[in-house]
Image 1 (cartoon, rainbow, N blue to C red):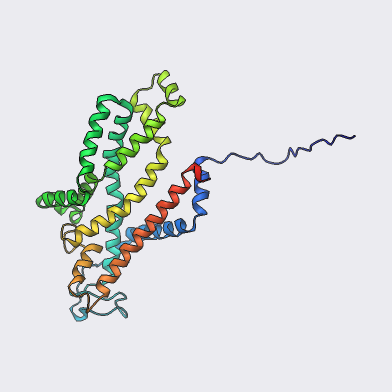
Image 2: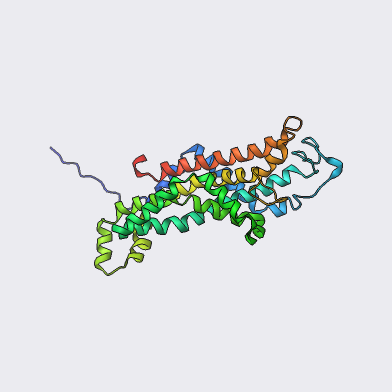
Length: 302
């Protein structure tokens, strides 16, 4: 009986183990809805960055073309002051992107330190911070945002970026609770791992352990939470602008555009339709992207 030797091809290149992020990227690309959502998000970012070049005069009034229907010189029509709706939609996209990104920066700046300290220090500090979190969580988000926006309305910050700085602060202060709880939960599950104990044995202090060991391993859920938080911030800003508490006129915002066209909705429905579609498409795109990131960053979905 002859034994057959297994042939080994030494010339073949070694197979590399896929990294967590590389594997997640490939899974994300296989999710068609996430890819479509990501493509629209990238397009929205480009429009926001190039808004001043694409539509340099969003508030220019043409009184000879008041309430002009879509088509011709004005592709999406004009409003009651003869302003080009397309130009205002483009600048509204810039407002939406800025609100979505900067509010998440505020939320992370508040939520990450609170969640990290609660998880790592434990005991009375954890109890105190979590009770503070519960108090903020019990307050209705939209009501708190409206109250903060109203209180700060007469502040000099109202003139910064057309009132956007107040919106960043109001939305961020009202919505840091979710990130704080998520960070605390993730870090509690990680702080007893062997690599954390090894870092402690080598003399690492708490801030070093948090920033170098714990947070990098908790980035996946945090990234997903931030992605889902962006459409909420955009929708909240649109709501505030619709109520007259958001962008300071005549700065364009999708919410204020809907408010401007609301009075003439039956005669000129396009004044409400186009900004409403812009909000809906943007929210859906970020939601699809968030769903894809959640699935891609979850190793159990492999």
